[in-house]
Every structure is written in C-alpha cells, then in structure tokens.
Image (cartoon, rainbow, N blue to C red; front, side):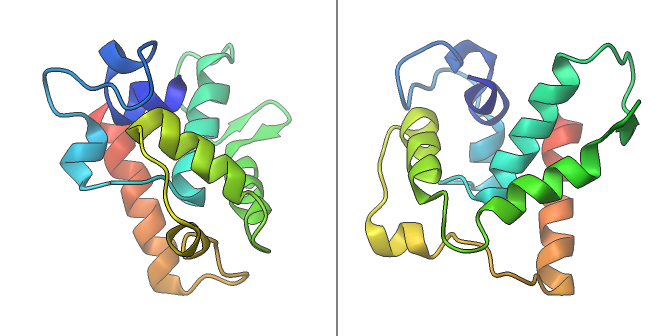
Length: 131
C-alpha cells in the first residue's frame, strides 16, 4: 500500500493491483515501469518514518539510522535473492508481472558504481520532494 501511495498516488493505495486514476503518479512522472531494490528500500524508509514519532526528517531517529536501513534493504538483493518480492511489488503497483530475464536484470550488483549510487540517490530525492 505504501509503494502504491508513493508511486501511483494516494487514491490508488487501497485499490486493485495496477489501479490508477486521474493525475499522473510519481512512477509515471519518472518513467518508472517497475520497481527495483532502490525503490523497495525507499518505500521501506518512508513507511518507517511514517510510523515513527519524528515530526521532521532526520537521518537518525534515536538508535535507528535510516541510511543504514536503506542500504541494508538494498543489500538483501545483492545475491539475486528477493526476486519474488520485486515480482510481488510490480504486480501490486503496476498490475503486471515481469518475465524471468527482466526480473533477473533488476538484481543489484554487489558493489555499486559511483554513478549508480548517485542515480539511486537522485531518484530517491525526486520522489521525496514530489510527495
């Protein structure tokens, strides 16, 4: 539900898989057609922040470090694990399932290049600023 709220818009969050209505959501504005480990990590961070007692954003909430949490989630996908989770997100957010080759292409390399890291950070910032 959080991923659909962020990527498709609040009105689609509780609707059937792939539902969209009205104004273009963040996924459409960014040209995003499927989720990836970075999007899943971003959604997890937003969900954690939403249920926290913080009234403004900070990268640390007491003993909880959001940046560490984000990279931990991304790291889950390093060895190809988590493809079923990506498939699940894609089905519920976009209403379609990707084929095995497309899904395998979404795994995260164990070490990210500086460019890939900056790209992921820029995407997370764009999504954060647009909501």
